[in-house]
Amino acid sequence: MTTTTQAARPTAGFGLLFLFIALLWFACVTPAAAQTPQTAQYYFERGNTYFESRQYDTAIADYTQAIALDPTLVKAYNNRGNTYRIKGEIIKALEDYAKAISIDPTFAPAYYNRGLTYDISRTFGYGPAIQDYTDAIAADPKLAAAYLNRGIIYAKQKQHDLAIADFVQVIYLVPQDSRAYRNRAIVYRETSRYDLAIADFTQAIALDPKDIELYCRRADVYADMEQFAEALDGFVQAMAIDPKYTPAYYNRGLVYVKMKQHEKAIADFSHAIALDPKHYGAWYNKALSCEVIDLTHEAVDAYRQFIAIAPPRYYGRIEEAKRRLVALGQQP
Image (tube, rainbow, N blue to C red; front, side, top):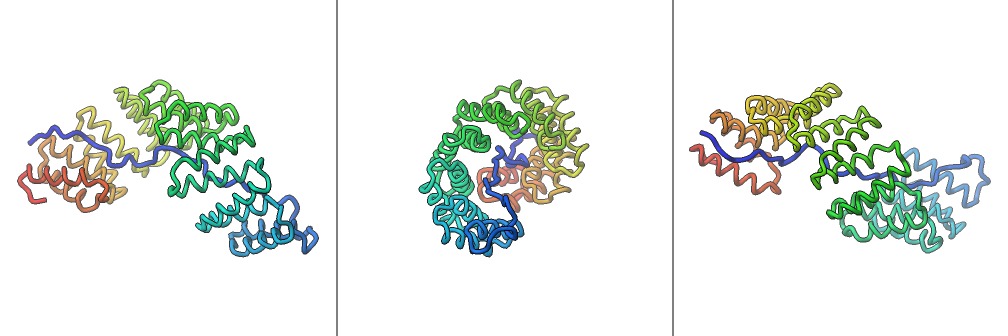
């Protein structure tokens, strides 16, 4: 029995955009041991030392003591906020960044770190993060990380031109950083500017040739362009770097589906499943390909595996798998 159901990507194996998640930090200039005890700077530097050894509560205590001795020590609020953020105490982190900004409204790191906190927490919407990244850029026009992260938010909002403009600025400021090329390439692909996407992924690979995901992403663009030989070669390059990289097999399987080479697609989906038995996308697409070439028993098994492990957010696909089982004469 054949079916016209198309291959789907319940998961492609990797995320869409790449945030710069490092907090802006003020490190020790002079070791704490060399500082005069009982000064704000002494406690600040010792707090940094505790932070670096992951003794976060002790670091917070020292930053708090530094602030008690010098309530205008902006960098102590900043670093204590960073420590709270790492501990997951988001409200306290935001309060510290706000205090730092109230003391020095031109202090770019506090805007950036607060924006990053809003960004990562995903509970405040995009607006506050965009505003803080924008304020950070106003205070420090060379702060590449703020452009990068703001560009990523714009891309998520489908404000593609604004996203590209930010990524262009990152490339101008930090031409050797592959992340701006990577993210701009993703936007170009989303807007069907495939040649530009290929060029940016190629540049990102030149800057970071061991980043296996870049080869797969570029291969996916070649597949969009129906340049299948180049796409397949890209997945082979990825596998050469890491033969156990599941997304390379899964995504190559999807390309074989486009090429109507279902036996090869099934082999790749099966390889992906062997590496990751809970890869529900591989189970689903394996079922589809098995059904196309009349491997009914294998299709039934794959559909059932998919139904058993797929997350609830894939309700539509789960229901489709159940309908396919019924069409094959089986109980869901």
